[in-house]
Length: 526
Image (cartoon, rainbow, N blue to C red):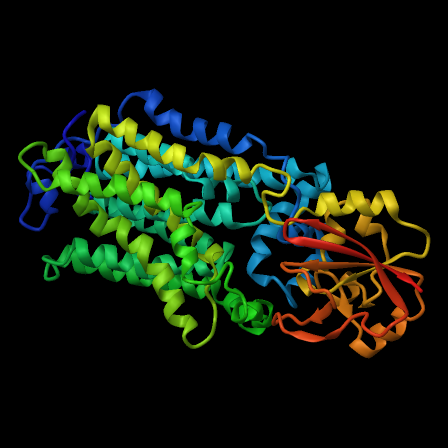
């Protein structure tokens, strides 16, 4: 294993172009550090190939869940109607929906079609993350980081989902890679890399506004890296150029920020939800508490060994890299969201998934620092810690909801005149997931259809009108999600109950089916 370069050190080609070194050049250049080494071709190719294989494994087995049903509901409509919808709901996902719209219309809304873009994004993330590790430490640290990303169960979970999070993770990783290249670049090349970085950051912000949380993380990286050279004219020009680039990225994404503010009622449920928005979600984010514990142990051992810098200079280099790149990336976005949530709840674990590559980078650095014998053993420990979760996320209920099972139940037992009622507004798109079952039943709560109303599932009548309608039906299928309530209540977007659905009506409960996070209740007229 070759000796590592210090954090953010310039690569060999740039060292050659900038020699002899001036007094204002990068300290890494002055130190005459090693040339950049890509490593063997197989080590470059292995992370994306392993990611592709892992993420395709069981990709069609999990049922669509509520968020994927929302994607299908959005993109199945004509494109002008999709644009109209974005003015009312889900503007933050506009770019993602625009990417998915032609795919769904060409190939249909199957599990494979809806999830394939996220699978490919996951493979690209592994490749780019490995490239970051190679440039910051060594080819072997890059290889370990790329494979470490694949080992974490959370990456499989969101690489197999028809939502934008896989692409957000990819773009956050690409923007970090471009930042590293910007810092490493020779003076005459910095403008080129600054432009590339700006494009990457802008696309990230458009894909998801929470991706802009990478800006303060990158600001810390630059500040730490250049903390002793603030009077250097080159550093000051770079800092100014970076600041202007960040401002432009925010400005371009600002229309989406405006729409998101107008549509903030969509995340009102965060105020009453703790399963995906509580502090414990940070601990379980890699996939489980066991996976997190295994990663912490591996990194801690590597850190302890790294204190003996005389044993191996490679081990002495990677903690500094963590301080400059990985730690701001890993800690910054969740810290900002938690702080903002003191005023208004805006945190959920899905909004900080872009921090996962930072953890994988830390793990890769640790594995490489542990050497060619202990390092692979450490990686296997993390793999074993997550194997049960890896299996679970590939089960039919692996995405929490099992809409497919509900649809099979309804399809086998429905009768003419049956209707459906969704007690929770987050379940109203269930009918869009599959072409049989729930989607064939009239929604008795519907006031205006999804296309005329420019919404994901349409608008609803008031509770008194709904109860009046229910008095006229012979059978109703009622869907409850997240918890079973013996006397079902209609919930609002804020997750709070608005009133009882069937209590006091001439309807009796004849059967209850439970599919993990979903309950299907069948009521019949007495």
